[in-house]
Image (spheres, rainbow, N blue to C red):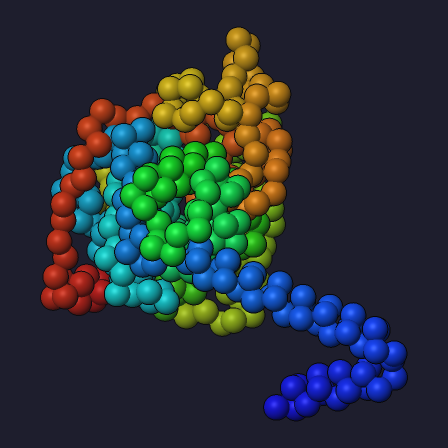
Length: 373
């Protein structure tokens, strides 16, 4: 009421102090400003993506990732990752979401989050980390991207245009065709790692909190980052999970300070149980078989490699989900860390994209939590 009174008072002062034609002009400008604000609100309302549409979009993008990399057909391993992920997801802002945890069949070290609750981690990344606290930190990062709707908000903010999809004037919601087109573009952006720095920092922050609240040492995210930093030490270009801007060392510093300043709980590493289920190691980066960018299921316009194997800086790529254009060879960020170029990014995948269906009961989750100590 006070704000409204101030506006009315200001309008009255303008009215008595100005001639009639100026009064009308001033009121016209005020009305124009109100109309513009109302239109902007309507545009945002019309662009809203419902939970059902978010799930459809996530299923579409997840299918593309599974077609690209294949899925490890190991029910026991999938159930183990699902148990860790579920325990962490229960601490997030969307615990009731139908979370799905998928192990991609590739030696590349990576992880991907797609809208609606689909979290993907590669066999290579599982082999690189060595305890549940590290896995909880990694999954917590991806869970936060989904829980905080980073993809959805980016699409709504851009009104779909930056994604090459026009929403149109219909208020009936996103059509199946529209969501399919969005899925194609979102897949490319997630694969290439074109996301905002703010979203990445937010995912780091939330991932450490959720892992700690689940009982895991939140430093697990830090040690996972340190292993990735060491893996990419010889790389001159961005590669793999978290090889992004801001640089990995900066992210390590931020998370470390956060754990201290916020006094995050959790002390468990749970290394023994992890090594019982994950019995393999990650391949050295030099031994990871990579495929050409064109074989990665991406349409034209993304980075390609020259005959000498180096990244072609002239080819491809703008940052579309985050709304700002970038050179494909420039610093890139994503829901799973900037992925730039390199063997981890374009790693060869398996041939079976079928989901491994697992179910965890409340009793199993309760029993599993007892081992977080």
